[in-house]
Structure formats: C-alpha cells, structure tokens
Amino acid sequence: MTALRSDRKRPPAKPETARPSRRRLTGLGLPIYVALALVFLLIPIAYTFVFSFNDSVKSNIAWRGFTFEKWLTVCNEPGLCEAFGNSILVGVVATVLATALGTAIAIALVRYRFRFRSSISLLLFLPMATPEVVLGAGLAAQFLALGTQKGIVTVILAHTMFCISFVVVTVKARVASLDPALEEAGRDLYGSAAQVFWRITFPLLLPGILAAALLSFALSFDDFIITNFNSGAVDTFPKFIYIAAARGIPAEANVIASAVFILAILIVVVAQVSRSARQKKLAKLN
Image (cartoon, one colour):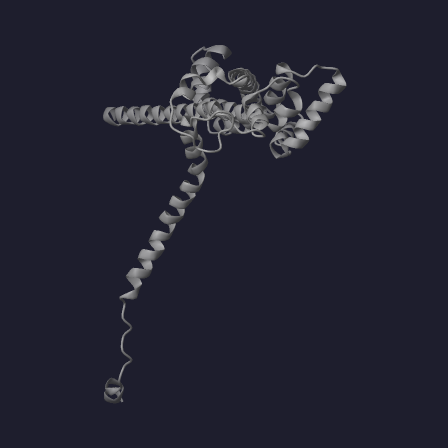
C-alpha cells in the first residue's frame, strides 16, 4: 500500500513567481494613494502661491506675466491690509481669552467634583457639534436682542465662545495625564497654591495649552460664517476674500495667503528642529 501511494503522480507545484509581483503591487498601492492625496491637497496652495506673482490688473484668473510688484505693494489693494489686521486682532484677543478661560475650566472639570459636572462637560461639546450657520445666527439674534451694535467686539466675543470648547477638550486631555503626586510633593515642600501652580502645574500643562492656543488662533483666523453674521460693517480677511471673489480675488490677497502659509510652515519646522535637538541633548545626558 505504501508503495502504491508513493507511485501515484502528484500534481505539479504551482509556480510562485506571481506572488512577489502581487506583493510589490500591494506595497505600492498605499504610497501611490498618499502621493495622489498630497497632490490633490497642495494644488490650491500651489495655485495661490504662483498667482501671487501674476501681473494682474483687476481680476487674477488668467496669467498675464511674472512680477514681484504685488509682493512689494501688497497694501495698495483698498481694504486688504485693514481686513488682515482685523483678523490678526480678533484671532489674538479671542485666543488669549479662550485659552485662559478654557484652561481654568479644564482643570476644574478634571481635578474637582461638583454638581452638574457631567452636564457641563456635555454642554461644552455643543459648540463643536453645532453647525456654524446655526451658531452664527443664534449669536447674531442674541446680540440684536441685547441691542449690541455689531463690530469688532461682537466678533471677538463670538470667536471666544466657540474656541473655548476646543481649548477645554485639548487641555483636559493634558490635565488627565498629569500625575497629582507631583503637585502634592510641592505642597509637602511648603509651597503655596500659587507657587505649586506656576512652578509645577503650569509648566507641565504648557504643551497642551500652546497646542490649544494655536488651534484657537487657526480657527478664529479662518472663520467666515460666524464672522459674517456678527461683524456688521467690519471686514476680516476671510470676509474680504468672499466679497472679492465676485469680481476676482486680487493678487495681493494671494500674497498675504502665501505669506501666512510660509510662516506656518516655518513655525512647524522650527518647532520640530528644536524638539529633536532637545531629545538629542537628553539622550546624551542619559
């Protein structure tokens, strides 16, 4: 029986030459998808940067020639620099207010137990989940009911209100990861509440606070819908772009947008380089 079984012809083995090619195709799929996604995301940015050098007159749709004049005379476009300054002012003030209030709320929600604590945590997510049209219209109706004249102050209040939720969520995660024993050690060393906060708690929370502040500024600077409902006659940079789009966005607006993008990239690069340098120093010390 064993001899008969051994004499039976076995089917020929399948060639394994196709497996490496399939693996190569499967391995190339993700990089190709990532590359196409990056190209799709960077096309509008590249268009904005290239057309900031366009020698345009009224509209900036067709290419007319290369020039540096728009970068040198960016404020010649009426109302552009004023709108950009308003966006910077609103973003900075709203970021400072939202970061201060949101950090205090985040510490209170994590470290203390009080009535309606869970309800407050739930309500803080409502501005993040509510559509901006509903939020902007509701704030505009509230200001109208109070008889408040719309302007730069109402825009700052509106931006502060919806930025607080993002600050609370960001800083709250940082507070939850902080070990309370570090603060208790500071109190055991006869440190006052203010000394423990500024010398122990605040430095440990600083990365989360900075992340929340950058997020708040980006949201405030980029917002259009809530600003349009509550700004009145005041123009911000997104509002200026929206109004100018009807007749063609000027090249000077592309200049400011390109400069803001380049500045953001430089900040990220400097932060990453400094972080890697600190890690190398710590590795050498260890």
